[in-house]
Length: 387
Image 1: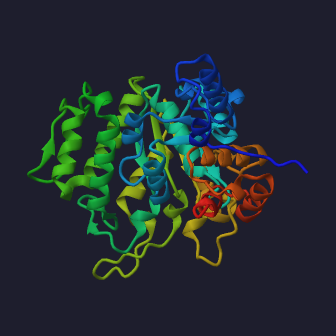
Image 2: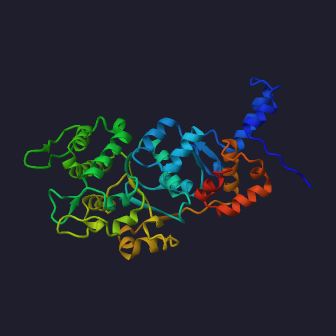
Image 3: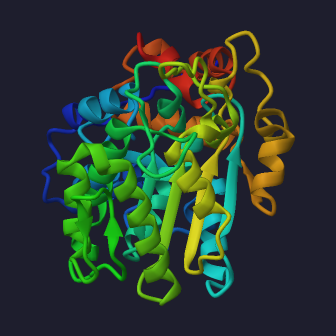
């Protein structure tokens, strides 16, 4: 019977103190160890099928820009702190979407791409990888980190200033504008507004105002934040239609757009998501003829009752109304890990000492971990916590 011994990087270094860090032997080992788990290509523009199944490290500056405003989940934050880096596994769905973005004709109206898959299969990491790809080409981002936040009862709701039967979400609108400014301020600093916007009898924004000033006004005057979001969307459409920018609209959990909310307002006991100004503004954008624009959305089983979260197909989660609204769209499934991917993830966990027990590093230990996780990315992370 053959015994397999697996050493972590620090253990190997301890066993090889006689090898100097400057020696060619040590450099060859480091290159071999790194290439088995990672790719040195940190620019997603260079990622192809040959890097599939490898990890790449997102530069910290990009992490700070891309992950602002609750994009990173608690367990991702924990991993980022523990591993002192943010790595993404290069997977087929992200490569497919990036190939689509390379090939589509941007003179056509907005392209809608819809991610779907089982719970915790990695849809958000796929979206993050694509966002990083677009960031490397200076796309403008308009991001909804979690659409169901707009439906939560704790949200402050107010009547729309301009449209009867619609309700504004000042706090969420302010957060969206802050997120937009942090992600895009360096890309929009030279743009000016193309029209005049009137928010009330006393408050307005003249044509030719710097776009940054318009966004900053909405952040500082939260009462008008929802209206400023609408003005911002119009300006982004104008810029995209005039070939000044490429726009990526990212919405996690878009099926929340067709759900009842937990909110009420005075005599209105139940508010439907379609009665929210933010939902109306984004819905109009998604159905517009804007060119140089792509909408990357996901449907999430989390929004269903805890006893009914197994269905994950778009038809299950969107219903007829949602499907009719989004069509035509490009569906992209995000599956659970395959055998190669789950082995690479466990290699990475060993490298970062997330897995330390010797028994867990053996072939039989890995088989048990694989069985317990069911090839699900999040479950794999949870199974490895005590190891």
